[in-house]
Image (tube, rainbow over all chains, first blue to last red; front, top):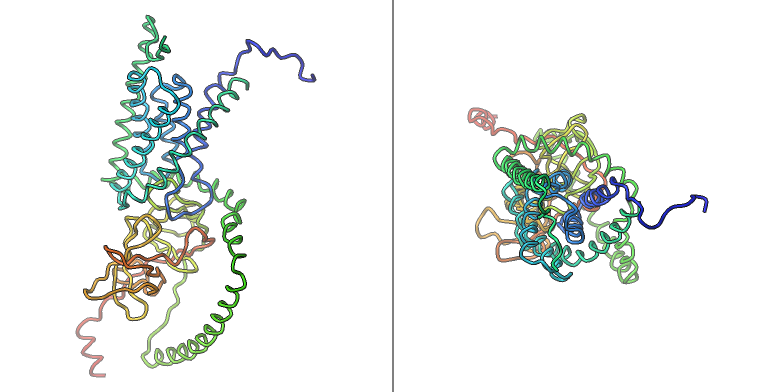
Length: 171
Length: 294
């Protein structure tokens, strides 16, 4: 009452919120590695990538293809991977998803999950190859729990992004 | 009807060019990123300099978060401690009595050791740590095992210095920013530590596996490591001074003995940065001769 009259229909959402909410959510996802825990096992799923994929699946035309570059750069700052690894892989993921969009006009949620899960697994394995190229020597089996956790947690990220999608139109 | 593809904006030339340009930018950016990745392989020094600038920017964030969340790490452990409390208590009392006896024996040995050292004229310099700092965060999502240390070049930290926790060796510094440094943990797949068995000095290499364990490869053939063996740094090759505790063997596998690091970085509060150890040069032949004459 005190806020006065606000039209509930036909109102104009803020442009900043429309672009900013998804971008900030992905960046916060990338920053989860800052959680102050020094771990000996790579177990934390790549939240940045998962949230990015969830947004891409929910709102297909949210981002131009190059949006993966700055977001990937931000992820690289925190992830401990060699710089450029997420920039490269995330952009490739976007390009691959564009091809998928042409192949499959109609996709249901499970297909989205399968595609996203496969892409996350591939990104993590290629990321491992890049990390090993820069001096590491880790067996791919070590990544298995992390990949499984990532795939299982993806639906949760989709839910989160759907909530945020409602939020960004009402901000 | 199929949903309209956002990549086909109809007849507007402007929109079509816009989309084309976004693809050009994306592909060019991906090429640039590939170059960056390649520098990490072929010019690691330049690459780590780049990354240490970024680490400087982010370390205050995680050290603030760490102090706020300091106690959450051992919640699971404190709950687990309630199970079997009585039997554990009994076992611990027995252990305590045994270790008290051992402590007395060790005291005797220490005195004897000091006496013998005096006889030999050996000087026992204690190594002064360069600085003491907090391990603030690690790369939880990447397959490399780095941790960020809250001390950098302004505290005298330089590349290659070993980082030692209260329980044993943690890793070594691989890139230094002004106020933070990146530590390659000993469990990282790219880290090799020269070690020896504490009881008989059998040399081995402790190679990280990336999953929180180490593989021990004996350097002399015919040596079998048993579960429970303790390994300390041997000091050969420099960097780590001899005698820092590294790992305890847990089981014998196909490709070598698996070991667990004694210093668990996940529960580490403080770590000391030590100067790089330089093995004393072997005495010149003439000096040996003199020593014999004396």
